[in-house]
Length: 333
Image 1 (cartoon, rainbow, N blue to C red):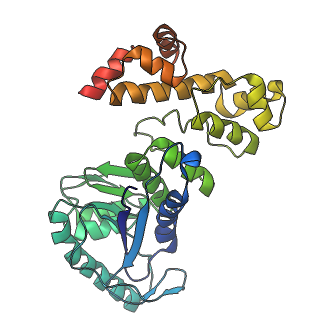
Image 2 (cartoon, rainbow, N blue to C red):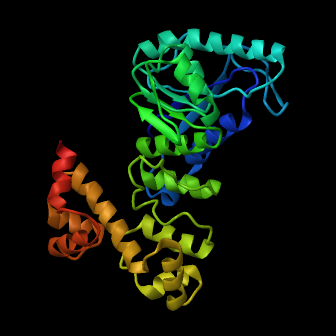
Image 3 (cartoon, rainbow, N blue to C red):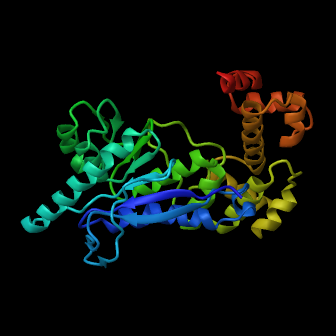
């Protein structure tokens, strides 16, 4: 079994609970998925929580006790998650927030200098990274109300507004609050696959989203921004086994509907037909094999559900520009 990935959530005083709970829940759900749900063996995560203070009062008034002290060392490959602190008019509380953020920044600076860890900043967590000088020369974002402050704290950074999250090397920053979930789903997709991230998003009843300037959604997540359980059952089954010979009657049985009604559901919710969906997932699977394996096109076609390389090329041209050989060159570059 692949070792669990260590994740350390770092908590300042007056921590925003959704900044903490949302991304942590993504990893918890991922760790509990089985291969059938995710389409592959999902990664496992070990979650720990630390901070400068043993007791933290959250933004909603709920106290968090027995917070571990900031560790002197971390295992290589640890994902560090900086959680944001809520705003307050209380000057004494503001002082406590500043003190813990400064302590976190001082602790973080030498750890990130080792080049062994990945840093995720949720919402105002980016301001802590800025205090540590970690955003200089990088693209980043934060809550829309804090972008100007972030630019002042990190004048050599490129602060991007209207972005859900921004990944730049080993550092990823997110916009306000719930965008931390989007960022963690993105990281999960990188560590495993879009299929795994999509399964987690469905379990959490959230959408798989990308910021407007980010790459388009993959076929594994396109057409999933709906809450129709019957259609999700069909899409889940196809995603788990794209090469299968998917007949209209088989899919309609899964949706507990007629074939005609299923076609209407696909058109309403995905702007396509059931066959379009099958083709797109088979092409996504074929594209992964073309870019990541040495298999020849005939073998790729057979293993992704197409009758031949000729059929694969023909269907490919309907949905993608260029030819399958272009994808192989892109994967080798």
